[in-house]
Length: 335
Ligand SMILES: Cc1ncc(C[n+]2csc(CCOP(=O)(O)OP(=O)(O)O)c2C)c(N)n1
Ligand SMILES: [Mg+2]
Image (cartoon, rainbow, N blue to C red; front, top):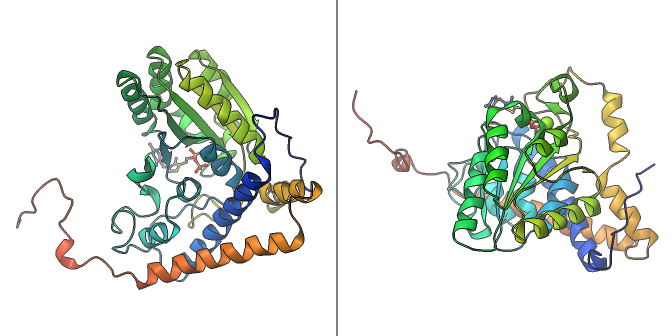
C-alpha cells in the first residue's frame, strides 16, 4: 500500500503534468544516483565519508523546484540529492565523488562539500549546523543590497541541539532576513532517535523565534513543493524567515560505516511502503498522466544518465601530485 499524496491546493499551485513528470524523473534520478554511488563506494571508486539520501527524495525535489533562479542554497553533508535537484551536472558530481579533476571542485571537496556557484548552490557543509549562520548572512546581504533573493538552508534534525541553530534563527528573525530554514527530520541523528534527544517539537522552537513554522509530510513531493512555494512568497514579500520541518526517512544507514544496530528492519519496511516515488507514480497513473511505458521510459533515461555519470567520472584523471599544495592558505615548510 502506498500513501495517498495530497492534491495541489489551488490552480496557481498546481504543478501540471509536465512538471509532475519532471518531479518523477528527478526523484528517480536521485534514487538511482545514490544506489550507484553506494555501489561505487563498495568497489573502492569512492572513498572517505559517504551519506546516502535514498528515501528523502521528495524533500529535495519539492523544495528545490519551488525556488527561483536567483535564490541560493546551503545544505548539509547529505547533499547529492539537493545538488541534483538544483540541476547541478550529474557527471561533475560523480567526478567529484571519485576525487577527479573534472569534479565540481576538482575532486578536492568530495561528497560532503558539493559546490556550484553558477547554480547558486553554495555548498554542502560537514559540520552539523555550521551553515545556518551562513544562510542568515546570505539573507542579510540580499536584504541590504535590496535584491529579491533568498537563501534556502537545508539541515537535519540533529542541528536542533546545536547553539548555532538558536543563534541563526534568532538573528534571522530579528533582522527580517529572507531565509527558508528547511529541516529534514528523518528521525535520527546518526544512531540517536530524534525523539530521545529533544524535549519538545522542532516547529515550536522555531515559532519561539517569531517566524511561521510548519511541520509537513516530507514523503509527499507536492506538499513539499507547495509549502516551499508559500515560504518563497513569504520571504520575497519582505516578511522575514520561514521554517519548514519535513518529516522524512532515510532508507540507508547514516553513512556507509553504519552497522544500523539502533533500528529494526521492520521499521525501514514500513517506511518503504510510503515511498515518495511510488506515491507520485500512482498519483500520475490514476490521473492518466503516466502509463507503464512512460514509467519505463523514465527508468531508462535515468539509468543512462547515471551510467554516463560513472563513465565520465572514471574517464577523468586524478589531480596531479604537483597540485598537492594548491588551494592552501599557508605555504608548506620543510620542517
Ligand atoms: C558540530 C558537529 N558535531 C558532531 C558531528 C558528527 N556528526 C556527523 S553527522 C551527525 C548527525 C547529524 O544528524 P542530522 O542532523 O539529523 O542529519 P542526518 O544525518 O540525519 O541527515 C553528527 C552528530 C559533526 N559533523 N559536527
Ligand atoms: Mg536526521
